[in-house]
Length: 307
Image (cartoon, one colour):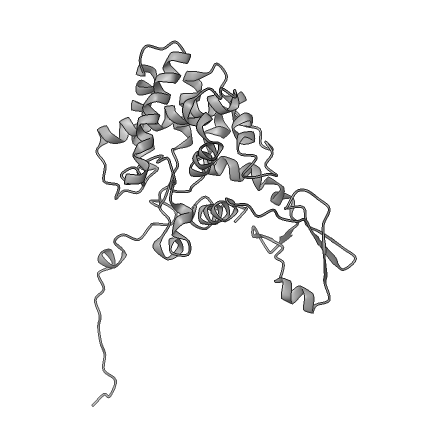
């Protein structure tokens, strides 16, 4: 008698993989942070004042700002001498399918509600940027409290609180004669959150459409200096960045640490056995910023070189 029992197990692959993201195909460009990662700091991914897009739109504490979105839309139309939002609505109808595909397939929202949300949120962001960049501080909400402006901008960099950037790009084009000139100003607007951010990229009609959302636009420019790190060839067609060991291992190897004099936090220098590291200013928003950038890098499927 054969003592080896042969067990045949039939696995239903479709059932076991249901709900899992297909890493390179169906994983949405604007995604929700997986629970195991979110639980590290739930508040870092939750908007304080404003919901953008569908993931947080039903939360009670954000509904007060929905009225302000409508007011900003009216301000936008009045300022640009438009009698209605028809041009934005027509543009959005042509982008509906692509925009919807940017979010998770499991999204429960009707096409009509999604359409209205895209138009209202997109126009709100365009008018907000216009008010802040042109320093039209007579707006009652923006004048009320500097902290409100800060919280709104912080909400706009949350990885789950994004609009497809091509929607903003089209709406900027409807609102302004040359929307490309606004990219630099939008990037500068977030300078208080990312002190070293510079408009390092040159965007044209083709390249700007490769940007998935506002957070990616900011990250690309903020982390652009990381692209100057040395690269070591690892074989045919395989390129890998030089990695640096932990501070403990470096110290054990005899490496010394000194405070660098550079203002750019990414400008770390190694000279004569000493690692010069610029100081990093920790502010109220620092943790929020880093958690969302890390989530974007970890779960974005574009193969970001900054990850």
